[in-house]
Length: 113
Image 1 (cartoon, rainbow, N blue to C red):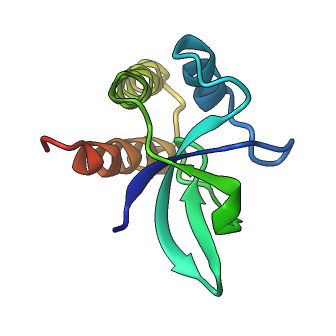
Image 2: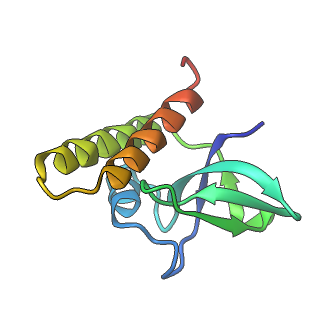
């Protein structure tokens, strides 16, 4: 079952600009794309940002699934973030590694992957 694409309503601590842009571009309304990773003490741990940040949500706070176009858009946005990071001379290698790990994880979750 995990990992799997989900949508969630962000609060100020869980709203990432890149994920917000994807939500706006693909008509997700006030929800953001995320990736449910695992259950933890009755909650679901969700990837909420391209840098690997996660948050715990009650299962009832998550909407399962993500339109394929939004999932692909999320991966495209992440690839652009990686390219931008590569263009910066002072980018931390850990930041780049986290972005790349997130992209690999998203790619694994695509239906035809």
